[in-house]
Image (tube, rainbow, N blue to C red; front, side, top):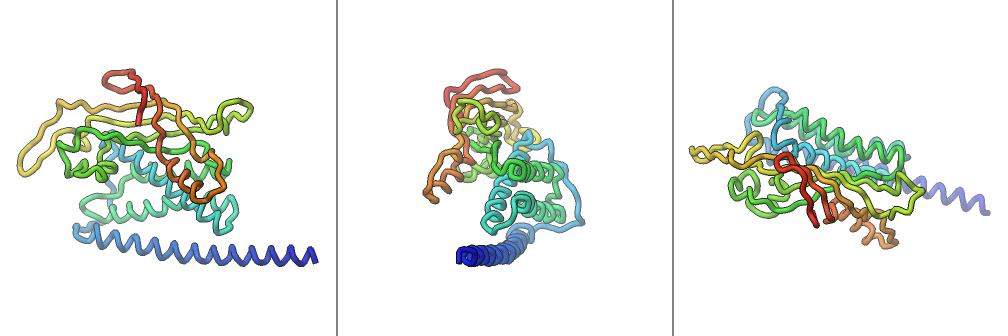
Length: 290
């Protein structure tokens, strides 16, 4: 009787995961197709087309846009991994296939860019996408956890007032468009690398990258309504940071809502004392850096 019960339970689990896998395949096929068609109709349709071509924008925005691509692709990969786990795939499958989820999405966008005369496929964007997906995939595959997490923080800058059509007219737009206010972090969990230590399991060490003084992609000179605006007096600089951080994913909770909320909030860097080095004034310290 016990053996029959076990076999029946295993059969039910197998059927459940088969149904989930079918659902994942169908749902993602529809979602991906809808996304590409929707982007083409809403964004690319009104711009002239061309043969597929590349566009080198690696020198723009002091590479902050590239780090943004890395961040987005990393989290899309994490979402894919969790989705594949739910469907019952093996660790190898959910790490490699699920982790590449963001790469599939972003590659589709780059292909659309490549056929648009206005833009072009960016090798730099694709490289950043691969690194972001690779970070999610490799940690899942080798450790079955994310020991080093990409995080984001933002502090409002003064520059959108000079060029709001590019850097954002509202606070919501500026969160995405104003690279001057953004900082991206690689937050690593010390305890997971050195288990034989009294170091708190929730306390990470984070290194960050940001940039400041950017009115335009390549320089601070631009045209608007036939007039030339020159803000070269504003110096463009890179910023590097070192700071402690809190890893909210290490906080245990049996409540699924709380656990999900902690995972979402963990994509943001916790405000902490920070050491900064920038290419204009050198070493600086902050009691609290957002």
